[in-house]
Amino acid sequence: MASRSVSPEFSPLAFGEELTAVPAYKAASTTSINFSSLLEPPLQLHEDLKSGCGGQLWPAGMVLAQQMLRYHRNSLKDARILELGAGGGLVGLGVAIGCKIDNTIYISDQENMVELMRKNIELNGLESRVKELVLNWGDPLPDEVIKQKPNLILAADCVYFEPAFPLLLATLEELLDLCKESVIYFCFKKRRRADMQFMKNARKKFVVEEIEDEDRETFSREGLFLYTFRRKP
Picture 1 (cartoon, one colour):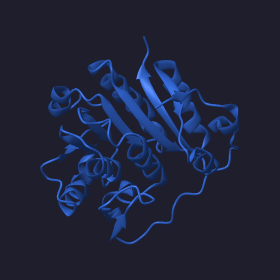
Picture 2 (tube, one colour):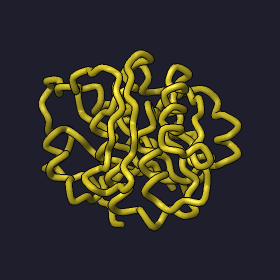
Picture 3 (cartoon, helix red, strand yellow):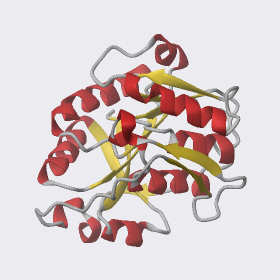
Picture 4 (tube, helix red, strand yellow):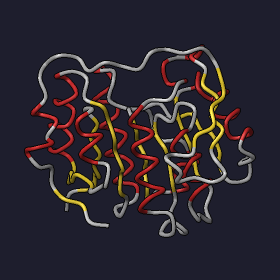
C-alpha cells in the first residue's frame, strides 16, 4: 500500500491552538466492535477506567485498527507484531481476529493495564495467539520483545502526556534499531500544541510518511492523523 508525505491541506500544523474535545468518560462495560463491518466475528472489548484513561476506547485506535483490517488483512502472515500503549488492546486484538498471522502478537502497556489486557484477551478466546506485556516507555525493552524483534509496531493515541514524549521517542527509536526493517504505524489525535512538537521531534529521528486511507478526509477533520515511522538510512 502506498504512503506519502503529509499534505498541507490536512497537516496537523494547520489546526488552531484550542484543545480538541476528548470523549466523555463512561462506566465500565463490554462493547461489541466490528470496525465498520470490517471484522466478523466482532471484537468484544471491556472498558474500565479504574486503572487509568487507557481503559476506554479512544478514536485513534479505531482509525488504526480499521487501516490494518482494510488494507493489511492478508499481508501480515509472517509479521512480528507489538502494540504499544495498548490500553485494553483494541488494535492488537482486532488485528489478531481479522488478519492472518502466524506469530504471537504482543500487546503492551504499563503494569496497571495488565489485568484489563488479559481480560480482553480471554473475552475473545485469544490466549494462544496474543500475550499481554508490561512495557514502560524509556525503560529497557522486555526480554520477550528483544527475542521477538518486532517488525510491525502499532501505536494509537500514545501522544497525550507531554512529559512522556521523550520516553516514547526513545522506545520507538530502540525498536527500530532492534529490527531495521520495522515499520511503526502511528495514529494520534491532535489536542494541543505540544503534540505538534512531538511530531517535529519524530521527523528529526525517523522517516515519517502520512498513510493513504479512504476515510482520511473524515478523520483528518476530527484532528486524527495516521503515519508510518521508519528508520532513517
